[in-house]
Image: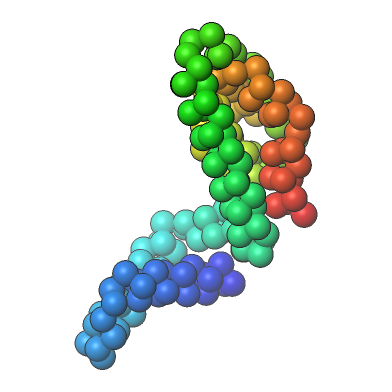
Length: 156
């Protein structure tokens, strides 16, 4: 039930922010559209702890800020490598062990790797993530476990 309420509130806020109109007719139509989406979601049995992860709600903004910083630093590194030329890159493919317990947090980890320029998560199967990295420095940063620890904090 709390997942349904959370999803309804999220949809209503999203609708209000995108609409920009607050006349009674449009507010009514927005409420009807949210109710229709919720009805369809329940009929499809789509509202659960994975589709609406309430346990991540408080921790995810801090993680997003940290990830934004990591993305900016990785962008600077990739631009530096482009200016230096082919001699500054060392493409590598390797396998990382994913220590996360839940599938959603494993996916967040793999997507975070892909969002960081210079690295791409090629495959996520079970507890392993196959990664392609532009440089050995990126490999060492991932193997150091800083990103993994940050992602693991989401599961607490």
